[in-house]
Length: 135
Image (cartoon, rainbow, N blue to C red; front, side, top):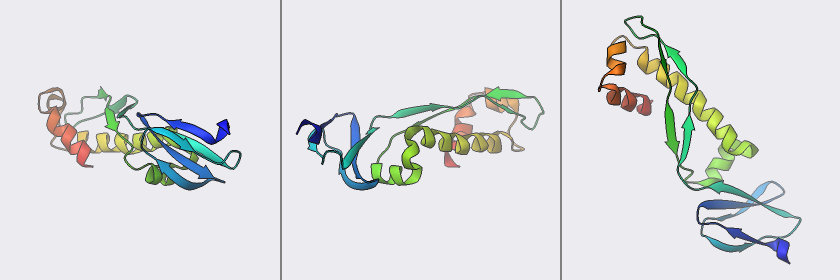
């Protein structure tokens, strides 16, 4: 009986899987139930997550090499869509995919003709961050 009860914390969302298929979504905190041995619970953090990228070398239009790093903040809003997108890899697979999107976006924006090292190092970098976000 105890293995059929699980607790959903207020900081998480949970999926109940039966043979790998999603049977129910638990987003409200409290007690929930599953069928022992047949169903399993996969939990995802509902809080804002952070991703720090690896340092990347970019060469702006003035040919000065700069080493930049970036970060992203994200939250899982739809656990079913998240599970379908990343599969059993979970957060690690999601962060690998996000890193694969973020690094080329950084290079594309910082490598354009109108961006110099002075632009990157000035207060105008918030404009560059907005351009990277749009990509």
